Image 1 (cartoon, rainbow, N blue to C red):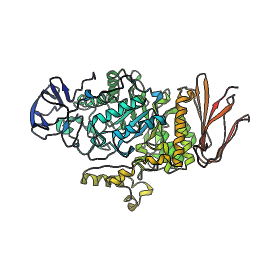
Image 2: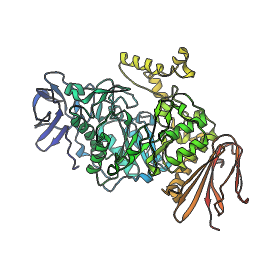
Image 3: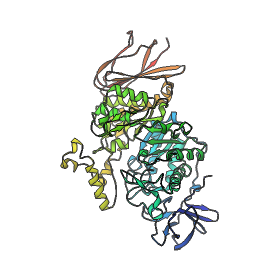
Image 4: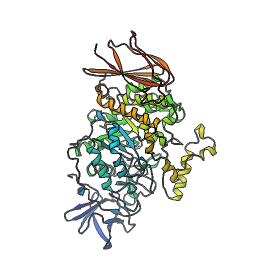
Length: 617
């Protein structure tokens, strides 16, 4: 590993080098906690940039330590690589160079090949560990996705959490396994041709176990706030060191764990009005540090800013892609009828859905009723793969009061049609764990905070839904699952035995077939700008083209039955997939297809989708 960390505890030939930024601290000691020798304190030397450092001999991997700033504490290392006893305990020295990697030939996944599968380590398998995920990798490779996206793994208080309450950003959560368990997961993924994307949170810290403030008051902004409290300081006094801390964190995951990309959580909550945005600086640092691999940087951001995915040379920030939630919101409004909260901004009409698919997002500067301000910018010229589409993700399921998935609320035929549309759109698709077999389990919000904080979280969670008509009655709000109850966490864990049950197995078979087509049909893999997207009643028609290869038509009837006239393009067509095939639909009701007419016609008796391939005359 050629990269040299700038923070934390790094083993060297002459000992262990400890480095921590504490600009307002006068004196700082590292307190070693060796199993056989007990505790010993060693002073570190302060440099002009506020970083304390020192090399101590006789220290080995597995030894623990803490810092004592100005006689206070001791406290864990802000750049700790592992917290074996929890976020309040000592930090453990880890040697990332000792891991026997086998992926030297791995170069990553191109954006155009990306099919993402988002999962939560604790609920994806019965084990709830990195090793448990690793055992399921062959299944995911066979399914046909090309990357797994891990929800945040930075250590958090308690034994269960979504991960967005992380406080030790460099340390994999101990409840999921040790650092080498995560490395084994990544190494095994690469052997199977799967990339690994990691969700990281650079907009806030969790409410319990964050000790950054004892080292420096400059980590947090004095001017900005977010929904989670004080914003992080990306453009105030000493912001250069704060930026360096988060860039260091990103590079640590890429170098020490061979992670292939980062999903940057809620970047709209990174309060930064500086001339060069932090995200542009982060992107440039990543590109310079890891030029030999394809590293994907994907933002979650509701602002619909085209500049985020444009090169910095063109005034952009250089990110690879952005979660484009307008597609999800239009689909949910159309299929399930959601109309409260941010769904107020969407009609759910097939015309607006077609516009969203054509452009990548719907809001390009129009007034938002929900936000009461104009929202979005013009995405013209941005390649379709830079927009990430989904029907489900952890937020859109887990932030519902009862954690319902889309397929829990709509008929199976409509879900099959929607799934076909998602996986045949030119944008980058993402599945959420269990979606591919229409999992019966919800995905709920869960935490494991200390009693007083936990009570406030439970009260706040239920209070969030008071504005929704279904939970206007306080008694109904009291029935919202308690995030602190272990049963809420366990209810969210996938039941893998469902996959073999008839209805679930049929949905899984459909997803495998669609993912196979996406990988093998040139038209579905092409970035051809001549794609056509039309609304026709309750149907969406997409034409996908590839140079000198057969054109495909995807016809998705999303509501009810109906007749769809196919645009005549001068050549005959053959059906290659129908969601009403008996292997996908146990109660099959095939659409009537008349290809002999001047204008071919499809008559659907209920929602469904049909994929047609152009044939030679």
